[in-house]
Image: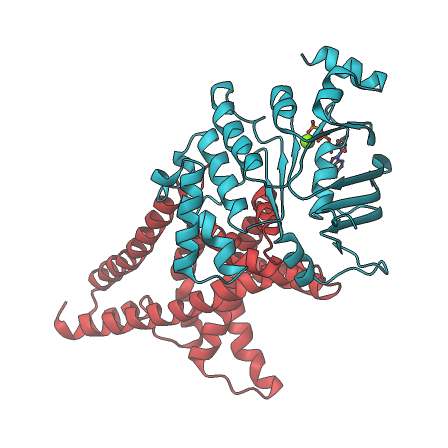
Length: 213
Length: 252
Ligand SMILES: Nc1ncnc2c1ncn2[C@@H]1O[C@H](COP(=O)(O)OP(=O)(O)OP(=O)(O)O)[C@@H](O)[C@H]1O
Ligand SMILES: [Mg+2]
């Protein structure tokens, strides 16, 4: 492989990384938001969110990407490819993240919450200062898992013509007639990204040992 | 005119799933008074204590902190979350299971509420917290995380955390029941010192010695009813009710 093909490959990697990163960032926060709204048990809204979470979790990413890209124009929304990809990935990952956050919320110690209330914290302050920091630590392994699933599922965005790290290997081998080297190189790049995430997981585990009381 | 009691319960009743756990409780705690609450397991001691800071909501009756209604106002209207929180901030509670916040160090546990609830400047909160930690003998552990402490140490930190809000009354729910026997003494010693400092305290306990030596009043709950209230000498030597006599006979 020459420097030209490496450059193409890195471009593809960059596309994968930035689209995934944006989706992950929005998806983690959106998932928390969904989990919190669900804790309020607002009638109708709650059922709607349950429906969204079940559908988004059951739909293959490729289907979701295609659906959003093809359906948006019929509602008069002009959707560029990147935006459609981010929307699809975000809707998918947020649904999984919502369940992770919800689990952390539901399993949070009632005793600790009572201690917070007893010294005059409002529920919101208690959430911000006492619950959230611990929920982050507890949820991080699950969230990181979900992040790596998302990245590994991200080649689905190629279906609407985005040249990501997987798609670009096709293009390179179409020119060089040597499919193996670009695929191996792509695998290497995926591994680098996932490895970085796993480091994050290790940090979470290091912090979590304090929470075991 | 007599002083307004720091805590007053008037006709407090409470049921769980149709079972009446508290029945028409009347209790007043004067400033500086230490009241011990005794009673068999399941008699409603914790529930009564938790009604004082509204962690448990009574079905009937009123609870006042320093003459101010907590939970519902005089008209029976639910008070706002914020108003309830600021009334709770005037009470301090110490739990059987310590309930320290594990993601915070000892010092951070103690300054958390003063800084974020009372909005005291951090430097002043730290100064006051260190003085309190010294008072309970935990100054040397200021930067330790709770999981590294023994039960007795955790409970002393929890006491410092409650004191940090300068509460008008301290509520203790069996503070030594979860401790290994050899650690009970260090916690009781701290509580005894607090009583000498003039703190107003309501203490649910099974420690008869402590109740006898430290309290000004002992009250006894039986099946949700407050059936005896007396100074410790009389309570332990000449209780009126036959139920208390039996209880004491089995708890020597
Ligand atoms: N949240 C709750 N839901 C249902 N029942 C409860 C609840 N809290 C307490 N009870 C019941 O109310 C009764 C009184 O409980 P409480 O904890 O006040 O007793 P206690 O005197 O503190 O007992 P112990 O000495 O065992 O701590 C018990 O029968 C208990 O099972
Ligand atoms: Mg109890």
